[in-house]
Length: 303
Image (cartoon, rainbow, N blue to C red; front, side):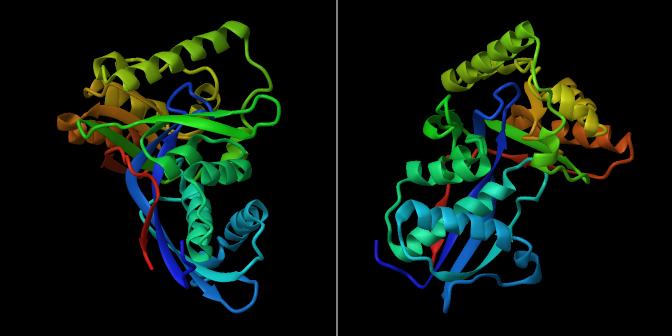
């Protein structure tokens, strides 16, 4: 790859955990942020607009990780983030920035990183590979890390056709992932963990085999949802309302506050309306989106 002076990277948002697949399962969604990078004189990382300046710390973290991985001399750059992925809503917004900066610097420098390298770099920053693998690789990803030190090993991914819709209801409540992790218990009863393993394995098999009827009521999680969902008024009711309206299953997206239902395409609007009404019942504004899977992952879109 030849070095460039500017670049635009499109990165999809994602839903992670997918029920009981805590820190393991991720699914890329067709909702996007575009991260633009331009070389600047010096070594600074500069947000182009006031809202971008709030992300300078995150962009700087991604840049340091990139230069440490590649051994390249640091360069200065400005950046801006445009798009649709809402922050602090459990849709992988932080990964869109981290991956966008890593992939953007790769394009600026012509280092030729593989997507595996990119997932590894972003996973090391995030501490878990679910959103990183989905946002970079696209599709439905089952990601693996080493048991001893948490380093990224690999992902198995498969594509999801447009016959499935993913209805995402995002209430006007922000949830910071690091804070949400503080609500999780230090340990779980043994057989509760077994039940979650059973559910996660069956869910992956249903998606991988494309036997989507098997998704009905497939999610049973004891790993994180019992501790996080109660902190989101209307969240559990919205999932239940979506399923009652015809959705196959549903889950808390990431750490929230968004909740998601999987449904057949024809039922998307009916499910979305039911989920909106559940949040309206507790007087919380909510935006419901009918999305489809993204099977491309991040894309070098322009220069």
